[in-house]
Length: 72
Image (cartoon, rainbow, N blue to C red; front, top):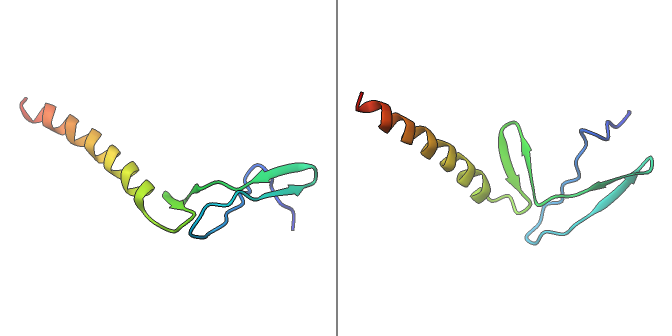
């Protein structure tokens, strides 16, 4: 199997975020506290706060537009 380094991410799940790095063919891959997969923002502790805040911000933006055009 050949690893595509530009698409590969390192994810570590646990209560506390721990940074982990892997060296693959001279290129460092670092872990992150959140990542996106299939439209979901997943946190290292498998909680939904970050995803919910992103969705809430998007919905609030759309609701503001709907309120503005409702009057016309």
